[in-house]
Length: 244
Length: 312
Ligand SMILES: Nc1ncnc2c1ncn2[C@@H]1O[C@H](COP(=O)(O)OP(=O)(O)OP(=O)(O)O)[C@@H](O)[C@H]1O
Ligand SMILES: [Mg+2]
Image 1 (cartoon, rainbow over the protein chains, first blue to last red):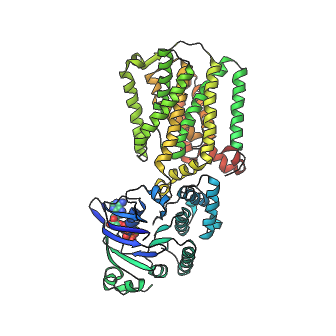
Image 2 (tube, protein in one colour):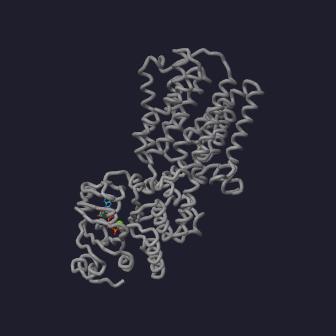
């Protein structure tokens, strides 16, 4: 059974149709890349799966159980966590406390102590152990992105919805982040839907790729098939090709 | 966070013990002053639960105080019960009304919640005038023995309960979730926090204690009348107290209440300064809001980090 099954999902904002009947399925421990031009509905898809936004129609199933329409906090507790494309840290709280909130509530822990310990473990995994005591609001943009990732992991989620966590990195940083992601996936065996513009990241971390355009899935397949797909090259990659 | 010695709590309880000693062994005038001061402190702790902790500004908070005042006044004047039953009913109704009102208004963000709470206070005022049970013109007066020390210990007990609760809520699971909500509510929900549940919980505490404090206020003034029970100046003073003292902290409300109360009712009551209190308190609020958003507790925290465990 797939971890997440999205069927015929639509979402409109007033006149804007952000999603028009999207279907896809994400297997256990599978990492699926989600690409598409700006405004094609990638973030909206993640938001609707996570319950942050309500679908206009269609369903989302988690392990066979319908979760569409549920509150975001309830969905997190069932094991689906998302990161924000534009990070939303709890700015006045320390990095450690930020992650502790996710551990405490996402894992339904009883008290703060164990949540802080879980936060320390998670921060060590993502390589932010030395940032624990800083106010989250004072982090750099890149650190805030990584904090998003730490929070999502700390919830104990089995399904991660990652919105451009690799954006804006230098070449070396990207290499390190990809290595880190692979190591985490090896250890934690989560499923992930990874929204990404950086093709090098998509091709390196995902087993499959889904391409969105104007709220529709226009192609799906292995990374290799996708980069050679005529429609994808035209619609999304344009004349630039798949260089980086 | 865990296992730290609760110096702040010990310190606050020591101050409360000292106030109890002063009230017990000094004259009636001092006891009455302390009753008034603690009524303010109780209201400050009450609004601190919602506005201080979550950042939702309860402009019409006076409505819960009025619910408590009328609970006690109706029970004592109409049914001749003891004032303590009035306090219990005031707390119960304050808490229940907060749950009912909050279930709707806590869904509004920012200024909409503030306006909704303001509208409720105005509606409450007009509603009270419609019912003869609340006396002609919303005024109820009762004649019971003057027992300043009994009144003192009633409000003292309420404030002690608020201090202890504030301290442990802040330290525990709810406190961490509430701070996340205050910073970034949507992200808190995306991390597994149920914002509505936590906001309702602290709003309920807030209503409960404002109800209890309002009941004691009616007791200490032997009655209630609509225009002072729903006086929005009270709401503003409560907000000023936690702003000046330090929003959300367990020390701030007592500090802020003492400052605002003493400035307002004791130091600045010379005829020449009538009305001047507004200016002084208003100026203090503006300066604090501009330069030290976390109040006096915030200043101490920054200037003397070593004192942190003593004042938080
Ligand atoms: N809250 C909203 N209200 C109104 N319109 C919205 C909202 N969120 C998204 N949209 C619109 O829906 C469409 C899809 O937006 P979305 O953010 O999902 O795209 P995206 O693929 O994530 O783009 P990007 O690559 O720029 O992040 C866009 O046209 C966008 O303007
Ligand atoms: Mg996006």
